[in-house]
Image (cartoon, rainbow, N blue to C red; front, side, top):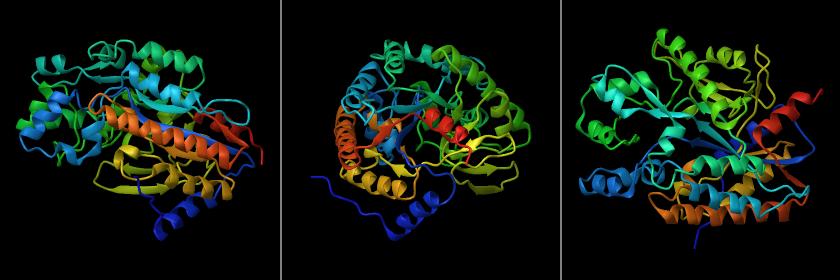
Length: 375
């Protein structure tokens, strides 16, 4: 039996703080924002078991244990749950996946002697993974059915310059993962290459800007439309890159709080209120609820999330639920996906029962509502 987890005093204080300020609405909107789709992580169960046999603590990081490239079964099972629960307008629940559109091209990187970074598109990656060959067509059907509305995460979920440095170090475990096409968090503690937009020097600004522009072109090719919103991987971005996103037509900024590496070791923490507009006219929202079953399958996440939704609605805010791809993946452990989907179904049913006037919407829809509000 899953145990209920009450919010601590500090958590309640934080939730009330981020909901108290900024734009408000009389509607009860629910938005699911889910990061990391399209990226690689653990390639298969065999490599996971191999790492365990070598006493590597791969089971201690839930992203490394459960997360992997999605396949068509992952999407189909998720879509079935989303379609099963309707809001007051008879609309099904909808996910806004934050997608990457590329991954490392391991063969080309190795051929360069680890001196140059190369990428392949996520569509190419899908064709290399068993069960993922039809993932794209399944995703496009979800878009057509209005339960799957992708927005932009990054070109890929790694900072390519940092990744090359990690490979050039020749660390045995890093190279073993490279040979098995695994990109794992526990491997390299001194080089964190997951924040795709992290800046280590002023020269990185132009490189990351190019990454954004190429990524948005690939996003358009993959989904047939341009994104209007994004959330930076790991919540880390240099604020100068907001200019590049603005130039590319991206004006909705998810999450609302960013750590900004300035290239000199300094990290600044920014807090943006609901509906805040920067100098480019880009609008900020906040993720104010959490639903992450893969983090701990013993917790009643539906109950916890309901408490956070109640706080959001009390302050006249949408419930923007942070939920990562890792909870919906069955490639490594099928039971991870199955349990998460059961909890998601419970959550959706609790939401419509508790608030019959609820409306399920996507992130882009929410940003357009905020933009059109003249108050």
